[in-house]
Each structure stands twice: as C-alpha cells, then as structure tokens.
Image (cartoon, rainbow, N blue to C red; front, side, top):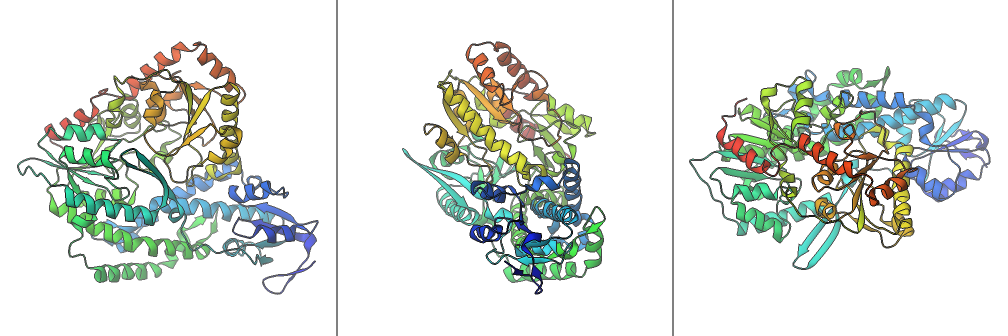
Amino acid sequence: MTMTGKNGINIKPEKLIVLFDSSASLDEIKSIFKSKRSVIISLNHPSFEILKKNNIPQISPDEFLTQDEMEIIQKSVYELSDWYSKKPLNDILMYNDVNLGSLVQAELINVLVNFLKNFYMLYKITLKYPDYEFVCSKNISIILEKFSKKFNLLNTAKTSETLPLDLLNTNFELKFKNLSLKLKIDSSKLHSLQSLSENFSNLLLKSHINKNSKYFLFSEINTKKFSNLFQEMASLTDNYVIYNRRYPSIWDKESFQLIKKSKILLENEKTLNQNLDTSQRESLIKNILKKLANQNEIFEKFFIINNMPFWLIFKEIFYKLLKKRFFDYSYEIDLCNNLLKKYPFNAILLQNEIGPNEQILLQLGKSKNIPILLLQHGLIFDTNEAFIMNRYQGVLGRNSDYQLVWGDVDYQYRKKLGFNPEKIIKIGSPTHDLLFNNENSRGNYILLATSGPTTEDILDLSVKSNTKNIETIMKISKIVTSLNHKLLIKIHPSPDEFDPTELVRSINPDIQVIKTGNISNLIKNCSMMIVIDFSSVILDGHLLQKPVISIPVKNNNYGVPTAFNNNSCLIANLENLEQTILRIIKNENLDIIKNGTTSAQRYLSNPGKASKKLLSFLSTNQITD
C-alpha cells in the first residue's frame, strides 16, 4: 500500500508514523495500521485510551517529554501568559480602565499548556524519527510543518473550532420539594438557567437599603456554601451586595430562602444592563484587535520557548481566543462599571485574583480607590515550591489591599513570602462555620473524595498521571468491596473532573458516585474518608473528627504542605491501603483524630464564628489601601 502525501509525495508504509490525537476515525487508523512497519504515537491521554481499548499497539506520548522538559514548559507558559503587561500592549488593551488581556490569562494558560505540550513533543518526535513520513490531523499538521514537510493529512480528522473551556459541562442539581433533578449542562444552558433565575429573583425580591450604612460587594459567592454568612447578614444594618456572573445565586428553594432572609442586595445582568451601547463596544474592540495585529514584531520576539519561536503557528489560536472573549468581557466591564456607579462601596471582596470577573472588579475597584479584600477559599500548598503555581492561580493577594486568611498556617505562609503582616487578617473560614459543634455519626460507609488531574498543568496531562488516577479509583473500589464495606465516591466539582461512574459500577454496582452537593453532609456520616492527593476536604474531615487517608497520585513537585507534615492524615499507597483501612476499623489510629483536631486549630481561626468575624471586621474597621 502506498499513500499520497500533502504535496503528492509517495509515502512508503515501512517508513510511516501515525500521530493520533483522537480527532480522527478509528477505522482509518486501523486501516493504516495494516502496514506492518507503521508506528502509531498517541498524542494525549484520550487518544491513548482509545488505542488501548482497541488493542492497537502504540507509543505513549510520555516517551517524548522528560520531567525537566515538562517543568520548563509549565514555567514558560506562566511567563508567556503575562503578555498583556508588556509595553506597548498594555496601553492598547485598555478598555474603560481594565486591561482586556489580563481577563484571558487563566484560559490562555490552559490553551498554551496544551499547545506547547504538542509543540515540544512533535519537535522531539521528529528528532527521533528524521527519516519517517507522518500522518496526522490538520490541527497537528499546523505545528508539525515547522519541523517536517513530509506528512499526509488524515481524511477523517475533524478540525475543532471550539476553545477548550467552551467544551466543559457543569454538574448541576435542581431540587423541587422531594424531587431532585441532576443535570450536566454546558455553558450556554447554564447562562440560560442563570437568566431565568435572575428574572425570578428580580420579580420576587425587594431591596432593603440602609442609606446611612456602609456598602460591601461580594462577588462569585456560592449561596449554600456561605449560608452561615448570609444568616449573619440578616441581623446587621450594613448593605451587602451579591454579584455573581458565573453561577446563579438562586437555583432552588433553599438558596432562595437564604437570599430572601438575608436582606442582601442582589445585583445581576438584568438590574445593570441599562443603556449599554453594543455598537460602540463592538467598534472599540475591533479597533483594539486591529492595533494588536500591527504588533507582530513584538509577538514574534515574545512567543519563544527554548530558543524556538512559535508565534506564526500560534497566532491563529491566539486571536481566536481574543476575538471570542474580548467582546463578551467588555460587556462584563460595562456591567461592573454600572454596578460601581450604583453604590458607594467601602470594599470589594473576591475569592481569587485570576478569574475574568474578579480581574474586572479588582481593576475597576483600584481605579476608583475602593479597597480590595481577597478572601481565602481553599487549602493551598503552603510551600516555596508551589509559589509560582499559587501566584498564577490567583490565590495570593498580589494586587489586593487585604488578605483575609483562614488561620495561622496561611498567615505565616504569606508573611514568609514577604506580604505585609498588617494586611493579612486571620478571619477563619465562613464556609466551615456550620461544621463546628455539629453532630456526626460513625457511619457504615467509606467516602472517597476524588481530585483528579487538571488541564492547565502539563504534568497532569501525562498518560501516567491520568492512568494512575483511574487505576487508583478502581483499586480503592476493589479493596473496599473486598472488605465488605459500602463505598461512596464524591467527585470534585471542577467541570473537567474525571467521572468514574461506569468504571466503578463494573466492579460493584452498589458503589454510588455523587457529582453535586456539599461533601460535608457525606463526611458527617462516613466511617473514614480517603482523599486523592491534597484537597480542602481534608479540613472538613478533621473538623468532623473522621480519620483521613491520603493517596498520592500526581507528582507536580509542589512540596509537602503543612497538613501532610503534622501526622493529621495517614499517607498510604495502593499496596498498603487495605492494611491502613483495617487499622482504622480496629481503632489502631486514635491519635489521627486528635492530630486532625490540632491541625484544624492551626488552619482555622475563630472556629464557628468566622462569618461573624468577617462582617465585624468590615463594619468596625477603617479599611484603607
């Protein structure tokens, strides 16, 4: 069999390499593989799994990137994501006091990680196989052409016009009396649900404004998770404004009642979309993009990795991202400007500094001299090794005026990093208030909390990390089943979290996989909790006095966090997990409960009273920048 290449070149089967990225038809891959000396290289974990399930021999993509190379790529991605701050780009990107480029940073990190992984991997592949012809999809050929001209396009490969984050679906639960409806919905349907919720809330809720009191803005805050905070707000005279754009503030009876009783001011698109000129905004964005298009020389010098420029093959993806997001984000900027004109805010509270809506409020707040407060929202790796990752995940208050941390562990970490200790306030965790003095029972099931590989860290994209995560979940399921214990699995709420339902039910159909809701209710009634890697739910387990076992899966070189250094968790592997579970069942690890309580005390100030402490801090302190 002889194939004809892109430029009419005859491709000899014995010198053929198929680069499979899962966008092509498996039948075409099988047809090509009939050539005895052809080699198939899967380019990511999904394509690896497809070939594996069909018993097609392959070379794993992990063979072509070393740990050091992946770390270099990740570091480069973080540095490249700062493109918007370079002169003169930062001036061109300004729209109503907000740098539009900063708003795509988090998504650009995701796009760059996936692009540069392929870029560097194809570079290594062509070095190893210089005399081979290649067969690949059009998406891959755009990169491959930089390193080899000898390739043929797969006939059935589909070209994706969608950005990665547009493909994510959110697990969502709607409750109507005794009926619970669990859905997996895409971003457009989530937006429609949010619009419906806003119409409903605007019709039924009445604003209560205390004109002589202070005004505080909370953004992207989950109503149920912060239920204790909303309850505390109801008895105070300050004005609390809630503004959520990514997720509805109200989605069922419980969330509605919390909002209603709190007497907060609920702002949304419907209350703020007044006299916004779409045509003017569109004209301004087109002008910004036109000016950027004239900066090719800057981009060519900037987008380089290991002395290899890649701007010319990346620019199409880059501008696709900007064109798709800039118009939407400029609308969000206009909404926020209307919000900040509507109330004389004394402070704005955010939970991260990297999200687009958070960046908008941060920059607009700064321009109007409104103090910005960063409220900690989860456990972080409090290590030197994790500093860069923490910085680019927006969990360190680099641009905020105050950092409101959970407790002494995070206070000391930020102080060690050089932040002004007078601007680091130990508030506690409002989301954990309800767990103190809460009754829980020694339940009859073991709870597994998953937290799998992400799509913005190159080490998480490896076949090894993804395979180990899946194998770990399966092995845990087999072990718990063999011990005649019931297993519940609560998956992480991230939209791209691996769903193990099909796999674990093939092991034991009685295993429940729970995708929505508050994990604390599940922890209360479990006998012990197993977590994968490092997760905030470890703290929930300590507060509810449950034994916690952590099983390492990923190795991102983030160091060892405090929670793994103080004997509050049992660190196990798949080889000794069964024995570790049996020791807990036999009560041979009583110290772990006590150590967990001690650890929680270091992590959390103002136990059970964090919501009250937060509102008191806002009301009684003269917050200055």
